[in-house]
Each structure stands twice: as structure tokens, then as C-alpha cells.
Amino acid sequence: METEAIQNFKKNIISIGRLLWEKNLVTGLNGNISRRVDDETIVITLDVTCLGLLQETDILHMKLDGEALEEGNVSTETLLHTEVYKNFPETIAIVHTHTTYTNAYFLENKSLIPQIFESKMYLGKIKSVNQVTPAVTDAAPVIEALKSNNITVLRNHGVIAKGEDLFDCFLLIQALEEAVAVDAISRLYAKSPGKKEQNKELASVPSESKKYKLFSQEQIDDIVKIVNNDPQMKDLGAQTKMTMDLAVQLEETGATYSFSFEDGRIAKVGNDTGAEFLISAPENIWRAVFNREIDPFVATTQKKMNLKGDFAKISKWYAPCSRIFELWGEVPVE
Image (cartoon, rainbow, N blue to C red; front, side, top):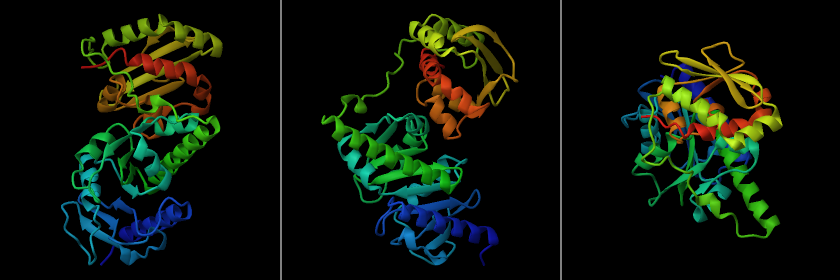
């Protein structure tokens, strides 16, 4: 017999399925949705169902090991969903769709860097993985891509998003579809074939670069030197009059360093946990940030990092903060 919690999860899936349908993010019988119930089980839409017309009987309660706890035809994408849940214990929900414009864009491109500020901060660089079968039979490339972003594209197939709830997943998929549409329309206006840099990777840290112990005093000292000696940062700081206190914190140990900025220059470093802005994250996320695998703005909007402070206020210093985050890549960690 179903518990009240499972019934509520199924109702939530039905609502999100209808929303995806109404926003033209799914068509026909494509796409699937799942939600974690506990450490061992999930609820997931059945095979060959219309996400816009779901009933509770179209959603199956099953174990992560593949055992069905109810009657029904298991989704062909069960492997994809269960592997994501196994590899990301913090993931609560997954949505997989075959969105039209996103699929079309990634038939011709391997990645997308949104140009609109909000999309860029929310999505970051969207990467894709090659998909050669109608259903996912090897989830490893998808798992790898989802380590740095909560959404990724399977070329020739569709898109998958993970999050803390189903609405988070919906928002990511909708944002990506909009970003792709904006890119297509801007190309039409420009009457150009598009920007070649879309498929360029971010500059990687040279293998010979020095690597630091995470949150070591040496790393912090060199961050200060690099930021204060950067001509671009000097100009941006002066133009925006960026004067604030920004602290970074390692969640596991509570280690905190605060940077006092005056017109973009770091004037003082301390350990103030009460700084105007505090960015905290676990060790694996900080490592990814300093090794240029995750953009800090994206990590914040996707809830991988926690920002305390008025986000609207810090947004006025978007340009210098973006430059600071770029410079962090020059102090990679071991």
C-alpha cells in the first residue's frame, strides 16, 4: 500500500509533467521524470507515457537496484536515472526531456555559452556528451558531465537535469531551451554563421602550473598578489567602485578567509565569518572552482555553493567578480 509521501511525490511528478507539456518542453511520448523517495527507492514515470497526461498509475515505485515495487513497464531510461541517484546522493529529482531547440542546436555544436547575463549565471557553460543509442546504456559520460553542472545534453537524444526538487530541474531545462532560442535568433539578426568560440573549451590550467594545498595560507597570499597585480581587475574595480568584504569558507573545517576590497583592490585579509558576503562550499566544490571545472556564479545559482548576502547587491559588481573568479583559476589546488 502506498504511503502518503509516495502519493504526494507522484502528484508532484504529474504537475511537473503537465508544466513541461504546457511549455512545449516535451511532446508525444518522450521524456521521463523521477523523484527520490529514500536512500534505496525512487518513483519514476513508466515507459511510453505522455508527460502532459500522467496519472498516478503511470508512475512506478522501484528500488535503485532495478527491482520494481509496483506493476508497470519500467522506463527505458531507468539506468540513466538510477545511476545519477547512486552517484549523487544529494540529488532529489531528475527530469529528462527531448527539447526541440536544444536538440537541434547540439546536432551542430558541442557546447553552449549563453550570452544573456541571467542565463550565463544560471546555466554556465553547457557541455554535451555523445549518445549513440536510443536509450542510455552507458551512464558514465553523463555522470562525469553532471559533476560540474546540474544539466547536460546527450547529443542526438535530449537533455537531463538534476536538482533538489523537480521544479529546479524544470527551470534548468526551460532556461537552456530559451538560451538556445536566443542564440538562434541573434544569429539570424546578425546574418552570420555563428560564433566559432562556442565550441572552444575554457583555458585549462597548464600541467606545469604550481598547485596549492586547498585553503592554505600560501594559496590565499597568491590570490591577493594575482588580483592586485591584474590590470583588468584594476580597471574594473575603479570603474565599478567595488568596495565590500567577501569571505570564502570551507564547510568541512569552517576555515574562513575574508577579503576587504577597496575599489577592486584587496586591502586586507582576515578571518571574518560575518563579512558582508560569505561563500561557503564543501571541499570537492572548492577544488572544482580553483581547477576551473565549475563557475562560482553557476555553482551558487545551482546551490552547489551557498552565498550569504544580498545577491542583488553583488550583481552590480558582476564584471569585477567574474574577473576575480577567472583569476582563481591561476591558483589551482592539488
